[in-house]
Amino acid sequence: MIFDFDLEPPSSSTETSATNKFIKSLLTRLREALSYFAQLPNFCKLIFLRLREAFTDSRIMPHFAISSLLVIVVLANFAQRSKAEELASQLIPLDPAMQTGIADTIDPFTPTIKNDSVALDK
Image 1: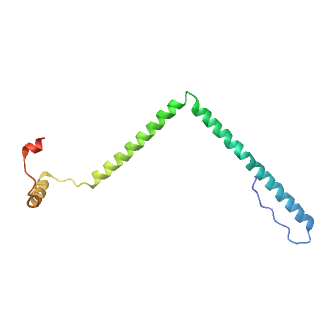
Image 2: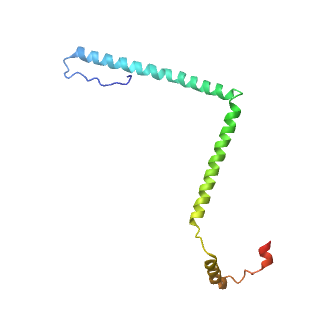
Image 3: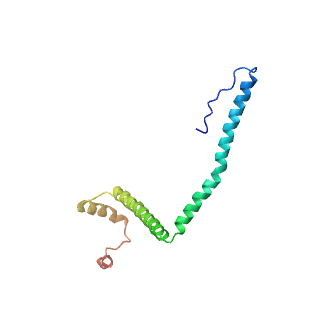
């Protein structure tokens, strides 16, 4: 593995050859790591060119556009459905007798609303 830094430094300062050996091995591993990082821009450029080539191909672009629109529409429908289900869960189902009781209770507080069957038919 490239980043395997399990090397132990020498235990005493009198072992200069061991210290030099440790430093050389550490520098070698750092040089290898830097060479991989130096190749990273070329790798990214290659991936970008492959993606651009795939999307500019006349066979793939229409399918990508239609698929992305499909994903947007499906996600919007899911969001709208979840909002509707949340609203439906907050509503309290009432029977007709209960609805009439609530309307009679509210009736004295709403004198400006006229009970007009013609307005309701519109």
